Each structure stands twice: as C-alpha cells, then as structure tokens.
Image 1 (cartoon, rainbow, N blue to C red):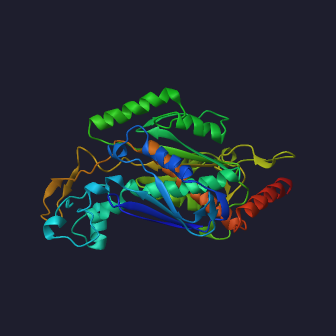
Image 2: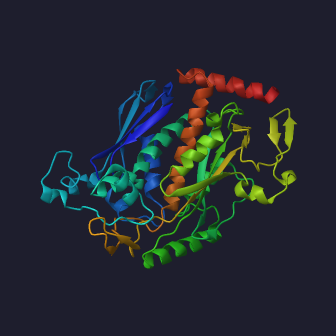
Length: 388
C-alpha cells in the first residue's frame, strides 16, 4: 500500500491516490467524511473552519460500496477557492495580478524562507500554499480508509490530547481503546481528564487574546494488534521507525516516543522491560506496556502507544520580526489566517497517520488481493501466535 497527496491550501481541490488496498473492503464516502469532520473541530481552531466543511468525492477504485483493488482517488474541494481564483490561477497572469497577495516577509518557524531559497521563488506564497497544514486533510482521508480496514480486522485506533501549553492531563487506567475514543470525542480539547479540560481551554484563550499560539502532546493507541508486524531484519522495515517518521511528518510536529519514551533514559532496565506472560486464553502477553507495543521494531501484541509533540503554530497574530526578501529590511512577518491552537485537531491527524502505517504493515505481512482472504489469514495467524 502506498499513497500520494496533491493540492495547495487555496487551490481548487486536494487530491489523494491510494494504491495497494485489497478488493472487497466495505467503504463509503461517509466513512471518510466523519473523519474529515473530526479534523475540523476542536477548541482553538481558526476562521477557515467556519468557511469550509470538507466533503470527499471518491472518483475511482470503489464500486457499489466496496473497494475494487485498483487505485482509489479521493478529492476534497476547497470551497474558498472562489475567492482565490486569480491569485492561484493555473494559467499565466499579468505582472499586476502576480503581485496580488504576494508574500515577501517570511514567518519565523515556517517553511517560507527556506522553501523560497530552495526552489528559487520570489513569491513565498508558492511555498506556504503547499507547506500549509491544509495538506493533512488528505492524510486524514487516507487514514479514514486505513481505519476502516483495521476496524474490519478487529484493530481499534484512538487518539487524545495529553498536554496543551504546559497543562497536562492524566490517563485513567484500564480504559479500552474504544473507551478512550469515546472520552476523547466528548471533549472539545480531546482530553480524557475532565478536570484539566477547562485549564487547557483557558491556556488557549489566553494565547488567542495575546496574539500567540500554543502547542502540546498527543497520544495514539492501537489495540488488538497482531504480533510480528514490522521486522528486525533491516533498519527501514522496523514498524516503530515508520510510525515515528509518519508522526514527525505532521506539520509542526517535532518528536515522537513510544511507551515510557524518553523517561526510559532515567529508569533502570528492570523498570523498563516488560516481563513475558502466557495464558491459555490470551497466549503471550506482557506484565506492563513500557515499550509501547514494540520489541525489535516489531509489534509484540500489546497495544501500540505512541506520542507526538507539536510545537506552537508559527503564524502569530502579533508577528515576530523577520526580513523582507526584497529590501532586506526588518519587518514584522506576514500574517496568514491561522489557529491559536491546533493540538486537538492534530490528534486526529496523528490517529490517521499511525493507522495508515499499521494498515500498510498488515498488508505487507499477509496476502492481500482479496479482503475476504485477508480476514481469514489474520484470524488463522492470531490463533498460531496464541498457541506458539
């Protein structure tokens, strides 16, 4: 399974093509639209979410509610495009038109300046249109397809927010993945701790009032994962490494950790390794899940637990200082429409990219031309691992 995305933030539409999915997966546009709607809500979101309600069109690869095994094309229209047709015109325009909405003052922390230097642009809009987090719309759409596949195989995915702007919540013990998903969905900041919910909102409100932005930490849990996804035989086949790359590839994300994560550096080995347990009913399990469901780059049957850290969004309504690329004079950076906090929405994106990597790993391990055959193979393999 592989995918590509295309499209600019203020262009006519966003597109994704997914290749390598089995034939026969039940899939509807509503499966995807539900996930797109989740991405657009959350405390701290900006004005664009009021303009557009993302809706997908499936233009290939699905017939009569089931995948065909051929490439799937997903398209999401940018409804704000009508206001940007001259600025983002595909056809050549006059020099006067080119100067409309031109960006010459790069924002600190964004791709603007480096992208302009790399590709030789004198209008930094050419950079910010693609580097915008609007691109994650299609990764959520792709993740919706991946989550549908995983759900049909009995694999659940949930994401939630652990921390915003230094305010950190706690995770109640013994919650199932489905319960985590339900609690997260009930909170505007996707926090599992109701006592912290209001504190997080206050941090976001304060940042917005001050023209500032705040970041945070999100966590994704994947439950009922088969043993042995990924491989130790090559560095680029380790599934935790692939998931880490996917998480850090989300706009504004700066790091990823599994299980106890960086805390492992401060603990003795006896408090980090998970003792192995066996029972007739469950087969091999672990006493704890300090390693976040991975050993040697492979899933060990425990839930995958991965966290990602998101920096504050670089577009500030009280901009930092920058340099005009024309005059080289000091100016306040450009302001594009933005959010004061996108951490709740980013947890939905994190769910999507993690689900996509797990789905890819499942399809790599098992024969996957036919979904019905895949279901049988996964069921038989689970029994094999239980009795090994």
